Length: 160
Image (tube, rainbow, N blue to C red; front, top):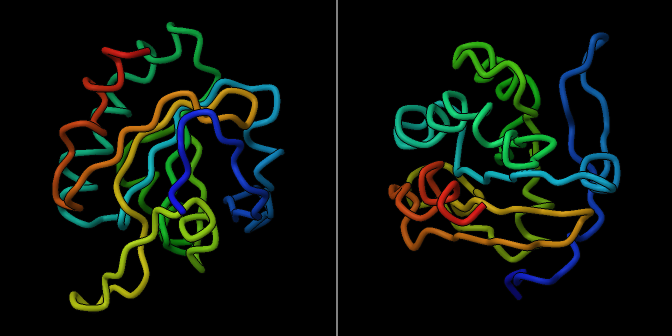
């Protein structure tokens, strides 16, 4: 079942890049007591994600945070090393990248998609959400992985 506005995020463990290598961070570690914009993308470095979706959140992170947001987190079904490289290549310092390498989070919130027809395996649908203290307050899910219309930064800023 797809997560809905008002639902609590399920407990999963992400991997993040730390000073000494990959570190485990739970849903509570990331969202408890914080107001977080969470952006789900099908894959790091993929055309729509890399050129159309992520750049807006990088460029407008100060504007987002000025609206009372503590953090902007990007999650994808990629390993922590790929997400670390993507963060660096995108100049996305200040954003948190959450590796969901086994699609556990995407599946737990019902936003997984089957990318096997494209040789990608299980992936996350594209979405943007506002999560307050672990509760989903805004959820904009794209109907196509190539679109960034309702999950893009400008659409999110209109409702923050």
